[in-house]
Length: 353
Image (cartoon, rainbow, N blue to C red; front, side):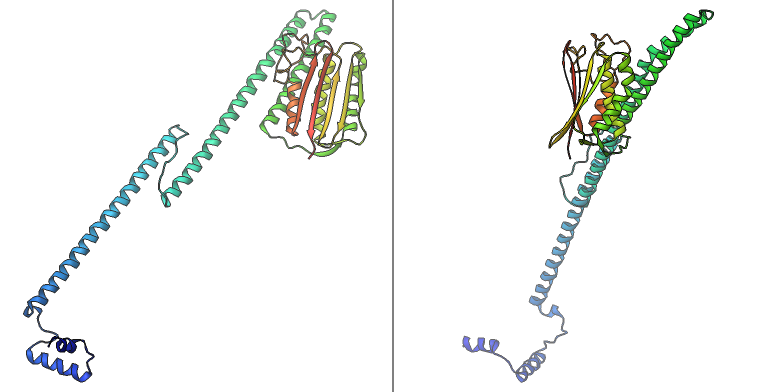
């Protein structure tokens, strides 16, 4: 019955039974090397299997080729866009960047190119600023030199015409000396400001005793103060120090003291004081001179600024600007307060590190 037949196929066979089965099949003509064409059903099965395998391989090949084609097409498109962006950047559009929404080797390359473009753009802007800065500096100093050069030419013509008049020669020789001194101060101050703005100065920072520094400044103006019958007074503790470049700080404070002398009348008084707090070291220059007009108070530190109310015909408008540049180069701050007709106060504040 059915159970007996199924048992024949499902039960475990011994070596003897397997050998007997192979001998029986050989007697019937079924061998391992027989042609499958003699077995239509087996041959049909093998054909279908091979056909399916072939179709699968062909389909897989087309899919793989399609994937490669799509991938390389996308890569080529991105490369063309990158080339276009680079050409645009080289053509002057410095804001141009390579856009990429994908990850991978090309995205990393494009990111590096964008970083390089940003760096180049920063360098280009710095070069433009430097060029404009030099252009403005040359224009400023050229403009300011016109007046003394014109005066020197005129003085020279007068002395040539009056060569036999000793009094005239002496008078215009003194005027020539003044004009030359004015030109020297202008050029020196302009060069100092230019070097400060360009960041080419290396400061020699040291702990400097303020009393000694300010006494030296006062001594340098002593002769002028006596001649103009003006007084310079010092107030402050002996042991206060400032971490600074003494030479440049002397330049800054000297310009402020000179400015005070320039705008103080006979019997005027200039007070220089200093103090130290836990956070700040301060230097104050106070005078009882003419004061600064309210219209000018916010412009006095601008380079070459000349007030329309000023009676000072010799000033060149660089002293206060130079002082401000030096103080700020020392990470300090300079402020000005003034009451017209009653004097001015300049305060230099330096944070203590």
